[in-house]
Length: 120
Image (cartoon, rainbow, N blue to C red; front, side, top):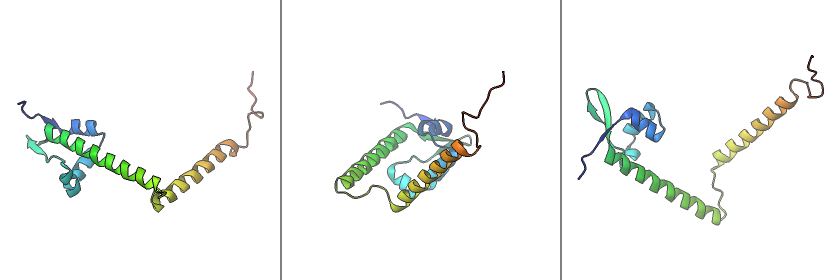
């Protein structure tokens, strides 16, 4: 059997594409602990995580994501909208602000391509 490897927290940040603040939050989140988030092992004031436990946590995250995707697909087949009212409202706000930005870019300066003259 291969001995367990300890992974330093900065490497964990890179692997999960998260910040040290996120690791701090996950250490205190009971839901993440229930999913298998490994507790820190302190060695010389540095934090490390068990490689085996990290891999198990990744598998658990994948399972949760697949289950959520399956539930979302089932809801869509039944005609239930996938986004919550908050997400729909946010999406509408983003589309309105994007439309405003594009209109400002095209007409805000008052200059059209025909009016621009390049000096020789």
